[in-house]
Length: 204
Image (tube, rainbow, N blue to C red):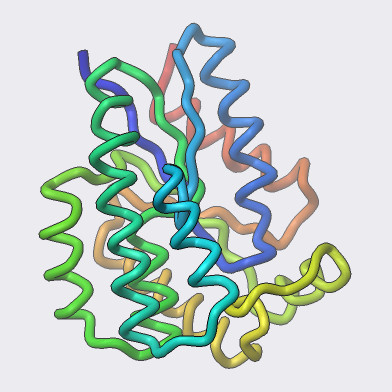
C-alpha cells in the first residue's frame, strides 16, 4: 500500500498548526487512517534535538545540521513506515522549512541544503504542501502573548520576511506540489481555502 504525505508550511503565527487538525478530520471522515507528526521533532530523538535547537545558542550551520539529523530519524522511523502502511501522514513542517528558515532566513547556501535533502530524504517528499502565507508583521502580532517565544521566534521582522521569501521561492520552484494559502483572513476564511484545495486534489 502507498499512503499520502502532506506537509503544512509557513512562518510562525501563520496558523498551520490550527488547520492541520481540521484537515485530519476531513480525511478521517472519508475513511483515511490519519497520522500526525511535526518537524523539528516527530520521534523521541528528533524531539530532543528540537528542544536543543529552539533553546540553545548555536551557529546557523549547526542549526541546519541538527534539523537534518532529526529529519533523517523522522523519515526512517515515522514517515516511511506510515506511507508503507497506507496511512495519510500530515506533517507540521518538513524540508521546505529548512530552505525557508536556514536558507532564506539564515542565508545558508541552497546547494548545501539540496545536498542534505538528497542524502536525508532519499526521494521521500510530500505529494502536497499547503503553504500558509502571511506577512511577518501580522504573524508577529498573532504570536504576541500566545506563548513564550523560542530562540527562532525571537528573530526580527526582517528575518521572517526573508523566511517568507524563501517559501515563495520554493513555491515557484514546485508549483505542482506547493499550494499557497492566504493566511491573512479569519480561521473560517483560511479553512475554506484549505478545504477547496483538498476537494480538488482528493475528490470523493
